[in-house]
Length: 240
Image (tube, rainbow, N blue to C red; front, side, top):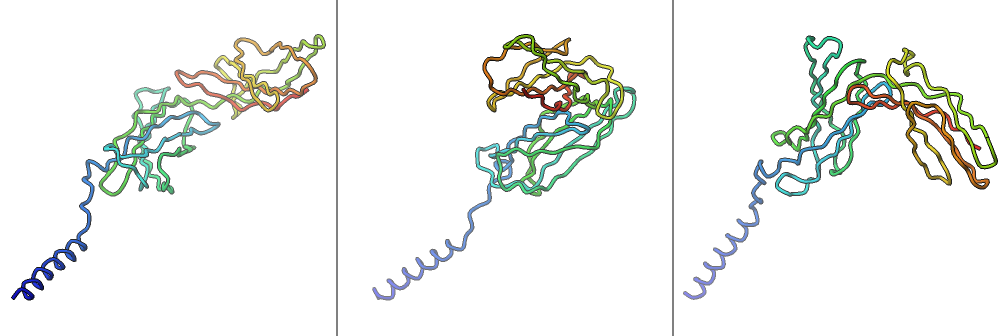
């Protein structure tokens, strides 16, 4: 009898053991697997708008994300010349390789027009049912950037005192006349390191230089269109 009871207990134990081995871990509830909201910034980049999207690394409950299924970009276009004109809307679905979360994703939007306000929002999709809320808006007032300044030259006044001057651009990168006042960013390169100087209401810069160390300069024009700062390309370098 004791032997029979022993085998019954053993059989019951083994049955429970194998049943427990076959069970899967319960799925994470949907509300705990929602990704954190992405962050998006945007800027004028030549004849396009570039979106910089910080992908989430965790869910809203604190669990780590290993991948994302897609990014959804909501895009709005508003005419600045005709405010009564109906705004246009698009939803852009991207399926890039997003295996490494917590990284920067860059999207270049080339379907843009002058004198428009573009508003972007982004959300991350983990799977068919689970997605983050939309991000805060990234707004860009779009105009084509100015061309690069030209005719850079350095004039030596004394062995250690110099003047850099240049010709401001008169047109944007598409050849249309510029209407807005320009400011300039001057990049000074010494020993592989860059220093940036803002120039307002002038197209020249005086500076001193000690020794024979080579230096290079280049200049970028920019203007402000409503609340958007629009930077043009840098000029060629002048070195001495």
